[in-house]
View 1 (tube, rainbow, N blue to C red):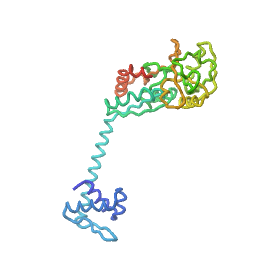
View 2 (cartoon, rainbow, N blue to C red):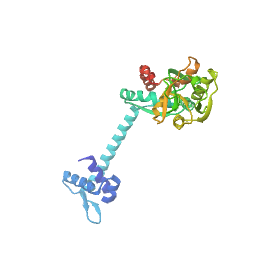
View 3 (cartoon, one colour):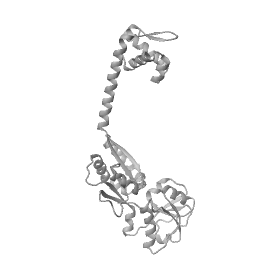
View 4 (tube, rainbow, N blue to C red):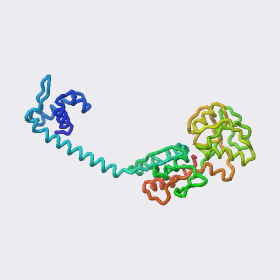
Length: 304
């Protein structure tokens, strides 16, 4: 006899109604009736007495019912035990990432990590640096890919990864859109769209300090919080914007991305990426992730 047949029998015996039993089992009544008939044929006895009005247990059905209930209970306990065992073996790695890493770095890394470590379940949270770092400190994240702050918390450890490439997002048809490379002096007097400093201090300061170091004044015409919004505003001709190269993958029509020549000054650190975790902690899953990341950092950095 099959487990499904026993479950069908017990459910009908408890409900004494084929329609209600079929509904509980999420089966068609005809399919339920077929399973009962197969069980009766296998045992060579009638288990249920059916009329047009009601269903009743036969003597053989009354004998089988408690045994069938015990078999089902035993199988369900065994299934639960095996599920618990599987869950105990599964390891979760909670990764936080800023938009740059979520769009550029992690898609290159996670498929390979999953292939090498199928027992590790990755939970990915995309947020800004200022929101990810508290999650590390509170224990809600195991590792995060962030912009390293100027004054890091002593409870956090940072591992530098690489510097992203800055580009200038220009509307198609703009006088600068067809240049091979731009210098900040060529951006003077251009309407500039910049990120909100409260939520994106690194990106905001990158734009502003480039002008300050060059002895120029930025002509800010719009402040926006999200990169997607900024690039959309560029496509509408509201201005230009200095963004990380990964923003070119947003797929916004009407925008050209031109490389920006960066000075060899600390301003480059505004586009730095670093891995961050709680200092003085051990985590095999996190260490496995870092091993793979560092082994591939060269190829990833060339696309950043």
